[in-house]
Length: 251
Image 1 (tube, helix red, strand yellow):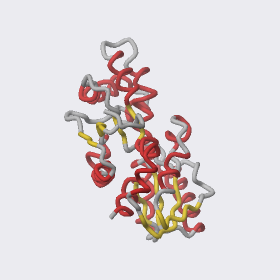
Image 2: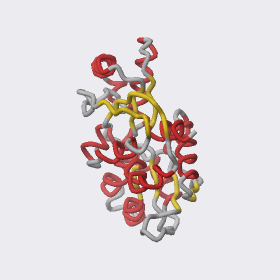
Image 3: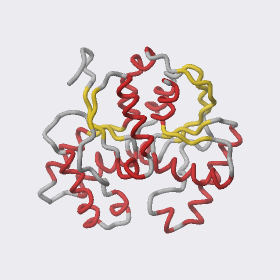
């Protein structure tokens, strides 16, 4: 379903496994934002993980075994966009499922789903006029973290900043380290914890130097990494998903 401007007004929401287990507020806030915009949405039943952790570690067979359930749930014959509030999971489905499922009976379905999947901020950036009409307001100094997958694989940089610009009162501070990896990298942080922590600490030093109030990202994995480290350092900067900041501004 599309409006008169050709913009979709009915979507599906793939919460991802992080959204199901650790970032439920991100998913709930995404639904609240979509509702405020008048965009009907549903969560397909039966989705689990996109298979990225195993795939990134070189374990294609376990990755396919996990991703098949999500593929079956998303390949439902609909042409509605599938919104994903995670840059890394969007990248996995859009770019890497075709490789993961190449030569398998699921290959065509993987391509169908890949064509429908959209990263959340890029979709919301198509609704900036509608967002401004809702008059979101929040007086905060914000730093934005570009996740590696969004920036380097999906090539999405301006969309989340365009969404932030719809919030009256937000002062966006461009961080010197905005394009630098947070150190999470999924299983990388488990294999190389010392390196992972050092990378996170370098990011956090930049946040404190910039004197921001809130760190915003569109990737729950990065937020989990940085928020966890900041809590241990008692850093007075909140780390929230773009959807959560929008929700707070609309409230």
